[in-house]
Image (cartoon, rainbow, N blue to C red; front, side):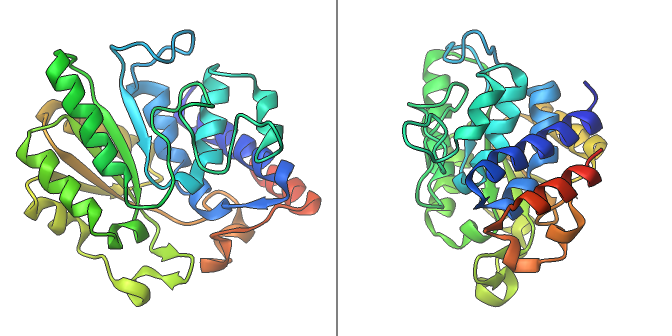
Length: 265
């Protein structure tokens, strides 16, 4: 499946997942779809039949509230039945609001409070290094969560220990309380990671070819890498894109779901 088709299918199924609950983190889920399509469509060395195999690439979704996008991707890759997407947050579900490695096949790290993902990824990458496993740990960070200081402790550690970590920053420039530049400006993100010892790149986070090239380049360079992805919250559905910060967590009514699917043909 090509990246464009895969992205559309992930968006449709992300919204299916959120529609089952009636609301949720629409904006930040849709903004990471394209990088998920590129990662799981080409770069991630994983096996749906053996999700816990030692010799695999791993993904830490630090912005764990975007779990529905990851769930949709994993379901489409065959990690679990697509029908599970209709159980988001319901009693007995294996798809909680924030990803949980003990519940969902294909999830490599549990997400909770924002800002912890990079530190967790350091642990995974350090373990790989100790075991002689030559694989990558990818981390998807939100731009807003970079306001948490723990990220920068993790960045310092990753660079110092020459860990094979690729940080992908979802720079959609909005968070729950408004624009990141108004709440607590996190720019220049690329310069900050570079100052901590990372090799850095900046791309359009919805350009599949640009993402593919950037990830390929990061893998060639080895060590701590950061790709800042300029994205749009609610990407792919016009009325969600137009909501601004209000799309961080919002409704997915029957009518909205139907309209969204029309746009994603």
